[in-house]
Image (cartoon, rainbow, N blue to C red; front, top):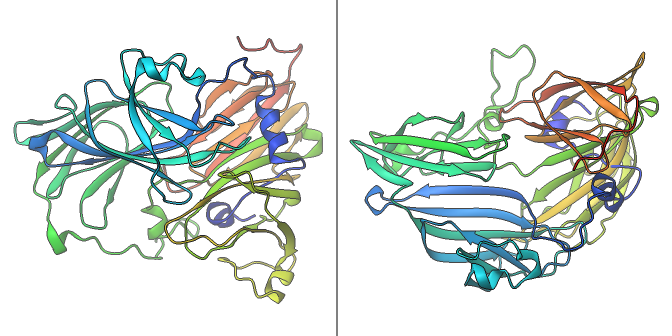
Length: 437
């Protein structure tokens, strides 16, 4: 797949089912009593009029405990919550919820470790979380917290430790950004308000401090020009478009995990998660980049567990079927076509797409070393080394963890609107690695 296909469409799948992939990733991680787990968290803070010390929160989160029918969202201590609402992200329908004490939350087995002195929003999910699935939620609330949002001279300050890894903060109308201590994208809202957005791949909270002052335009004059399809004249190759460069990386909903098989096979299996929210869309096209071949595609809807039909076609077959694709494809190019029910207005589907790729140039043995050399276009990418190998080199900075079965996982979070050219090297272990404690 070409680099642009990786960014715009790319999905990648494996020789066994998605369930088998997840079992491979977590096979030694079984627990006697499951605890509440979540995934794909993203928070948007909209700062309201500064004298009220209040800000609106839109929190996207996926309940990830298989079989769960309820989800608990903590109310942060020191903040006074109001105007709560909860919606099912798949259907857009409101969900029933109630505010309960930490003591009451602990009565649920998955919340045995809840803070007895805290408060929680207890949400009734629209459907039980399917195996290897997700229960996607949008939680809306307003917090009043004078310690986090206050005036300081002629500036307003939003000073808050953020534990969620993907966040954006939107300034009130009329305020310009004059300080931000966490490297962030700066993006205009459709109404002219200024937003900062960032991903925090580190192990702790992001100690965010945002400062703003009056001086920005308001009303029609503040509305930004629409992004265009023009490309940077300075790029040494056809670069990203204006529209792509100004898209919010932290809120992008595509992420991918590669599972490297033994390097002699040149093969890696993977799963790729993607949310479709455009009304009327009923298929996803994955254009395979040149130099790679794909096999055994599979896909399902994370929200419900429903399996989806997949077809492997060539560019010639796609043209003959009059199926449009967003990029030029050669007649012999492989395309995986995944069909699903048409998306309804105000609703969305989150898909998990899986397959195996064979790529002799990207993944191979170099003497006695494993070498994985591939351009990754997602904002969130992960690579898991095969069993029996230890990491010796990573050209791109990554966080490194050891899975319960001893394999090494690298996570590459890229806040820039471009690809990361990942180069990994590894060697065989002398002896089996001790399992992490």
